[in-house]
Image (tube, rainbow over all chains, first blue to last red; front, side, top):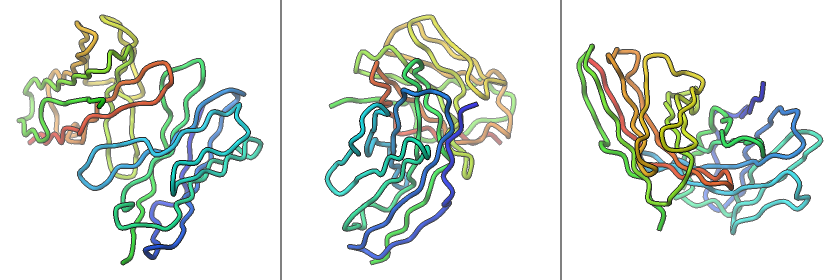
Amino acid sequence: AQTVTQSQPEMSVQEAETVTLSCTYDTSESDYYLFWYKQPPSRQMILVIRQEAYKQQNATENRFSVNFQKAAKSFSLKISDSQLGDAAMYFCAQAKRSNYQLIWGAGTKLIIKP
Amino acid sequence: DVKVTQSSRYLVKRTGEKVFLECVQDMDHENMFWYRQDPGLGLRLIYFSYDVKMKEKGDIPEGYSVSREKKERFSLILESASTNQTSMYLCASSSTNREQYFGPGTRLTVT
């Protein structure tokens, strides 16, 4: 069965510094999608970044970037220049290309220290 | 701007009541999902739907049913609410790119 593991239940970082959130997954598929979602306190879940497994290049969205290691089945999220508004639960998720369901990690709570 | 709306942000119901949670999306998405979110457990899929009148069980369908009579609307039904169904319920929709768009959630308390 597919699984997604986020080994850090909680992380904290000083404002303006860089933090990396870990995610590993287990799949027998060769083609799939990976996502990081953000859920601020009492607010809506939104997509942060996505990666397609067939693409070698790591995805980047402004201050957010990923380190996609396909062989190691690792998909970490790096947040540069952390801001107070980055405080949230972050969820890693995976989808097969053949399927519309997402498999979710348990989440990492990110705390930003002013 | 894409939008997924849910009928209530907060809901309090009594044990044994029939509960309806409504979700509407305006993006013409084929796929819609109902999740339950509990601390430390992430998101667990209850049911999903690929098309009108189509439904598939997710990981935790027991005690729930769904209805999708129109493409834009996906309803979650708790036939007889129980206290262990107290949770946050999230609705999402997606198209072929797998990216899911979420509603604001309904925090349901069953007393």
